[in-house]
Image 1 (cartoon, rainbow, N blue to C red):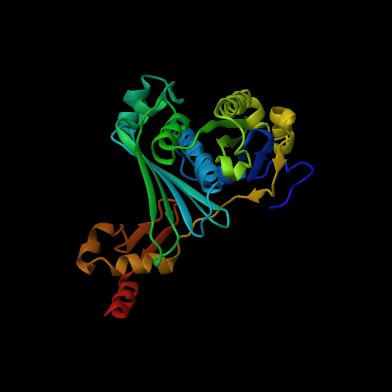
Image 2 (tube, rainbow, N blue to C red; image 1 turned 45 degrees about the vertical axis):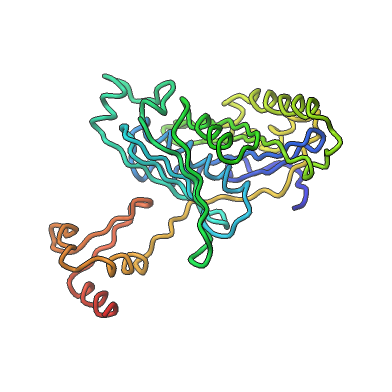
Length: 320
């Protein structure tokens, strides 16, 4: 990786990795905007569902780009509350997508009369009892990695902290911000995640640094990270490089190549064909619409794929 200079595009979707060599800490700053608009707004989710999804997507990008993998990183939150499922995934080349499943009636009860925004301590209220899972899939010939922890904590960032404490055992701090902003009558989503992580002594080149100093350095990194305001994290006019310098200038942050992120679904008619081949034809009647065609809708991008009987003849003939 090479150092980067100058500012970033103010409204870009990107990940900016960085390293604080003097205190043995690495991290990344993730910002999403247009990608969230493309993914969230097409579904018309209520705000109390859309904001947790925006947070999940920016957390997904933050965690995925901290790993070395060639494939798909998936973040999944499931529970027995009003929001049954949140899914976000990111490919190695930066394609992100996400969707949510929720119960409108349960959501209305959880929020109370007249309320639509995300409540304080929203995880137990909106997700109930559940789990947070991270999966890395690098193809059919490789073993999938999965980390699973209970949903513990009032916010999604707190749940991620639980994962790192229990699974990675690597000191990690994460701060997440997300907001739907209306500008000149047009709604836009912005979300950001800031993560710092203590590097192993050998990787940081700090084998001779004593434990007490390492702990002091780590506490300092977390305090500086936490000092970032939500307004700073979400400000499209404040370049990511400027924000990092503002937070960590005394530690001389070393910034690496910015990694772009963009909204793109991986669904296709060929993929849907393969799914239908795995289902007995007589079981497809439940999927027929008013015209008699079998209709399949992608949960990620809402694209509908319709199949008449001639299409089904073709699919099942090729499976014979």
